Image (cartoon, rainbow, N blue to C red):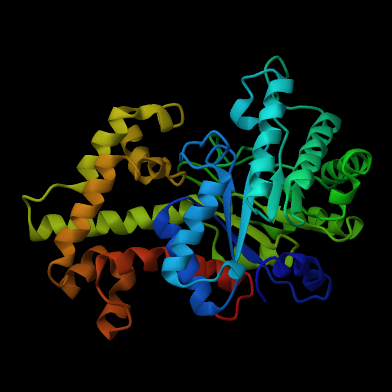
Length: 423
C-alpha cells in the first residue's frame, strides 16, 4: 500500500482489530531522509516525512528552506536513491502562528495563512493545524474556541491553495515539540473530557468556516503520557491512557497522533499503535543515533591517529561559538551543560551539523576512515551494536554505511511496532 492510502486506512484497521501504524520521520538531515527513503525502497512501503513550521516556512525557517524547497530536497534524495514520488507522503507539523507569535494575532495569522498555503501548493498531503499559542498581548494558552477558529481558518486557506485533497491533524500536545524542559514525573495523559472538548469545538468551527476540510480531518494530537526530556524518558503506560483510548469510540474516523515518541521501547510503541495512536512521530532520536556513530567513529579515528583532529572537540567549539540553540535549554554547572550539549536526549546538537565547520569535520572524519578498512576489534570496542553484523559480512564496516544503518535500526524498531512485516 503506497502513499496516502495508508493514512486513510489507519482507523479501519483499528476498528477491525488489526491495528497498523506509520512512522512520521521529523528531520531535515540529509542522511536521516536518505535512510528513510532507502528503507522505503527495500521494504516496498510508504514513507512519511514531515517538516515543522519553525524548520521550513515561506521565510526559509531555520533550515533556509521553503516548503517547495524542502519538497525538492526530499525528492532530490529520492531520485538518487531510486524511490518514486508515489511512495512519499510529505507532512507539515505544528502549522500555525508559532514562528511569528511575537507579532499581533492578525499579523501572525496572516503569516501562518501564507505558510500553510505554501505547504499546500507544494503538494504536502498531511497538515497538522496548531494555533494553540498566544500571540502578542495574548495569554500563552488560548481558549479552545479561539484555537479551533484559527485552525479552521488555516484549513480554509489550505483548501484554497492545494492541488489535491490534504488530510488534517488537529490539536496539540503539552509540552511543546522537541522535548520537555521540566521533570517528567508528573506527566499525565490528556483526559477524555479534554480531548472531546477539542474535538467538538473544532467540529463546530470547521462546519462554520471550512466544512469540506472537516471530512478529511484524520487525527487529533493528544498526550498519551509519552515524552522525553534532556536526561529522562517517560515510557508509555497503557493503563494510564485507557480512558483516552476509549474516547476514540465517540470520534468516528479519527485516530490519535503521538508526538515525542523518541526513545520509547519497541513494546511501548507497539502498544501505542494498538491503543489508537498509529501515527508515531520521531525526530531527535534519529539524529541522536547518528551522533552516537559519529562519535564512535571519532574515537576509532583518534585511536588510529592520535594526531587527527577530534570531531567532538570541533563540535564543542561550534556549540560554544553559537549558543543560541542550546543556552536557554541546558542549565546547571559548566560540566552539566557540557554533557547536555553533546549527549542530551533532546539532541539540540542536531541544529549544528549543517554549520560549515561541523560539516567539514564530519567529511574529514569519513574520508580518514574510508582510506583503509576499520579493524573489527575497533568496531567491537567503539560501535559494538554493529559488531556481529560486520563480522558475519552482513554489514560493511564503511563509515557512511554505518551511519545510515544506525538510523535504519531506529526506523526498523518503529516499523516492527507499527506492524510492518518487512522490519
